[in-house]
Image (cartoon, rainbow, N blue to C red; front, side):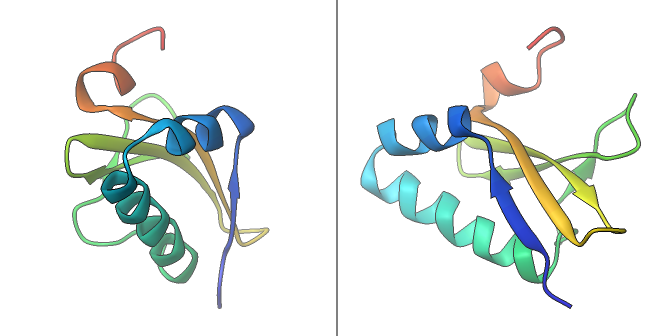
Length: 88
């Protein structure tokens, strides 16, 4: 079963502003998340049952998995030092 990957507009903007190599790597990862939302290297974030984080070079992608609807909702993409701090 394939999941539908939904990207928030703010995430799409971050991806567009990234360099080409980073764009390609993130877009490739998003395609893979549609096939398997829990790939090797994914980390479940504490405090919420649906939040997951995966590494893409120096960037992190934070997303929710909704198994009942077969949806992956990408919430944040950013440099590793900025994405996972509290309050962001």
